[in-house]
Amino acid sequence: MKICHVSFAVIRTDDAERWLTTVPFFTRILSAMATEHQVFSVHYSSQDKDKEFDRVRYRFLKDSVGELLSCSNVITLVDALSPDVIILHGFHSSWRAWIFTTRLKNYPIYIQHHSERPFRGVKSFLQKKVDRHVRGYFFASDVMADEWVRTRLIRNRQKVHEVFEATSSFPGSDREGLNTKPFSFIWVGRLDANKDPLTMIDGFVEFLKHEPAAELYMIFKTQELFADVQKQITGIAKSIHLVGNVPHHEMPSWYNKANFIVSTSLYEVGAVAVVEAMSAGCIPILADIPALAKITSNGRVGLLYPSQQPELLAHALLRASKLNIKAERQKLNQFYEEQLSPSAIARELTAAINVSQKESSSV
Image (cartoon, rainbow, N blue to C red; front, side, top):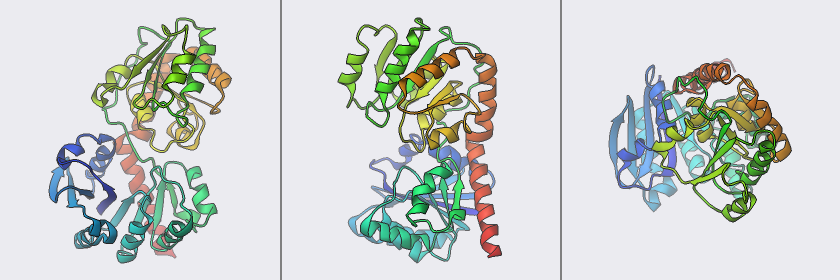
């Protein structure tokens, strides 16, 4: 099968080839698909370039105002490839998606949902028109498609398939034993309202009453709530370490410092940091929202707790502290390989496409 991935996002770099090394959470899935299929990936960049990378053929097209309005070059290129399947990444540009799907409507087109929400007004009208030419949609969780179906942007629920959008950037870990500090936790995200670091701190402070030797490492890029966070950790800074920004390639060493990854997010799609921590052997303690519930197969590994509930987070942390870490990590390693690894997601994508093609041919 010849599969063509397409993204309308413009890669803002003069070195598109180097960019490939910065997004392994994406490229590793395509490379896994390429073990059984012919895979192309088309992107906009500052220059035209053709590059083969880990079995996948990447095509970079020079962006311009005219091209970004008409998509003529990308449409011509994809049509020339004559793929069996097209996977369009994201629904962020309803105008381009409408032009693209209308011009290439004779091909089976699938849309991979990322972080976008349904539009309103003219953009919503275009999204509804796009749906006429789309064979299927890939959502990290079926629940995340509810609003799209309810607003009739997706008119047929059977088009929706659960496929996770990202994998770990790093190879899986066979780490089995305890960290030298057994009650060690890591939190990774922006210091903003959506990532909800204040719930993390409130819950952890309550947990410290039961396990005063516990430690939390907080890694973050943006600092919108930094002043509030600093205020809340007054007097307990020895237990909560505000690490700040860490280069991505150094993250495995930080994951190895912890036995648990905690997420307090209110909304997620890819949750790449959580997946990467899990691949490194960190047991997940996650807010019970659709994407994070999907990551754990509804609590099959790790623990889920209601979001924005510090006291229930503290209870989850206390339950986690009583787990058999070695046994949980062995279960986690197997789960990651079966559900979240590049090969697992590639298989899930291919299976969803095959099911959709069969359903379409039987209509």
